[in-house]
Length: 166
Image (tube, rainbow, N blue to C red):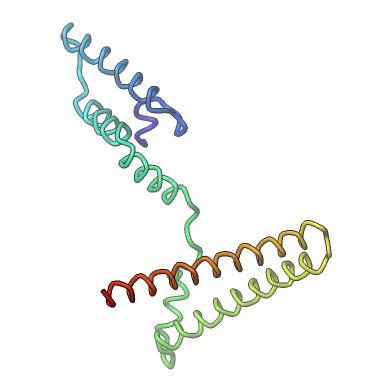
């Protein structure tokens, strides 16, 4: 169970919702303690840890990044037991088989890159108006950024030379 589920919230919950959810839980927990009801200490610790992590923006950002990583699909490329067992046969070497597998993966990656570049080239060559404007704008902004960087560098050099002169 993640911290959001522990507090009964969605991942898009705001800070006020987090505070309200914890306050509701705390109110129920203290009333249960006062009446002598059965208290689950482990779940109470979990709720307190959830509130501690989600109530501070930097901790919450780190936790959200962790959840994105955990929810991401696993990387396909793990070596299966059968494949590894085939590497152990007589006449094969593990480093050689690993190099062959890496070469095959790189070949697939090159094929995907070529297909992507071909699609991009088709879009650029399609002469659609937005493509031309986008390319022109990109080149203009790039040129302006290079010019501004050169001017800033020139200013720093002149300022440094002036300080050395005095």
